[in-house]
Length: 84
Image (cartoon, rainbow, N blue to C red; front, top):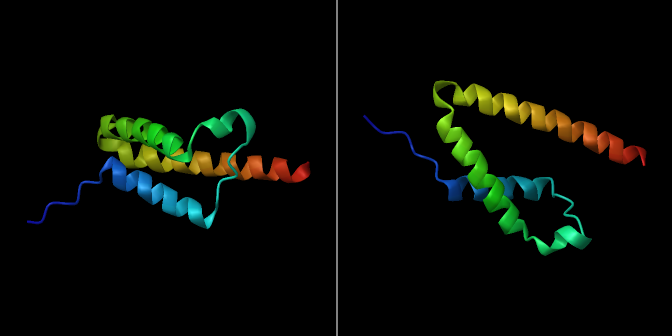
């Protein structure tokens, strides 16, 4: 029996960066420009990866629900930005 591939944190972060190339993030200037994109991806990636590994048997459902919620939130934020 072949074991399923265990996703590493590095793979997940690199995948997220690749996805962002298709829809680039408008990184803020000024105060936040002192924080590198790699630092943000690593910090957030480690937090999400840690949560994912502690959720147990419902983790796929929780991850999908979280992704849907964040996508809807991003959609609404983009609509609000277009109003200004």
